[in-house]
Image 1 (cartoon, one colour):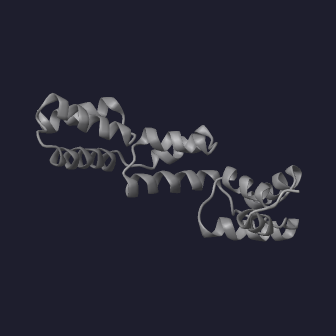
Image 2 (cartoon, rainbow, N blue to C red; image 1 turned 90 degrees about the vertical axis):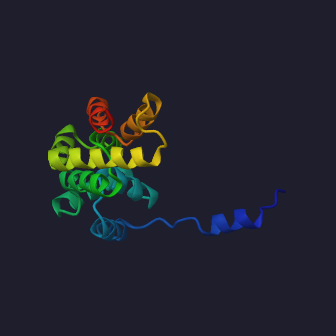
Amino acid sequence: MAYLSFKEKTMIDKKKKELTLNEAIKKAQAYCAYQERCQQEVRSKLYEWGLKPNEVENSIANLISDNFLNEERFAKTYAGGKFRIKKWGKEKIILELKKRKISDYCIRKAIGEIEETDYLRTLSDIIAKKGKSIQNPKSKIQNFKIGQYAISKGYEPELVWDTVKNLFA
C-alpha cells in the first residue's frame, strides 16, 4: 500500500471544487471586470473551474454580449500598456497578441493606437539610455549591443539601426 506524503495529501484536499454554471459565470464576470481579458484567458479559467466545452462556449458568448469581454478593447489596452509601461516595440506587442489568439483586425487597430512620434521618441530614449550604460558607445561592437537590445524589446531592426546611426555616428 502506497503512503501519501503530507504535500500530496494537502494537494488532494485543496483540489479545486467544480463550480456550477451560474457560479462560474458570476466568477468570470468578476474576473473580466477586474481587468481586461482576452477570450483565451477566460476560456482557460472556465475549463479550470470544471465547465464542459459547450458550457464554456456559451459562457464566453454571454460575456461578450454583456460586454465583459471585448477583444478589440483588450488588444488596445494591452498594446498601449506594454508600450507605455514596459517600452515594448510593435513587433513584440504583435507577437504577444498573436499568442493570445487575437484577430489580425484587432491587432491592427491596437497597433494603430500607438502614436508614431511617441514611438520614435521612446525608441530614441531607450537607445540613448542604453548608450550611457555602455562604456564606449562609439565603437561598432557597442553600437551592435545597443541595437540588439532595442530589437529584443520588439522594435523594427531597420528603425533601430537608423536611430543608432543617428545618435552615435
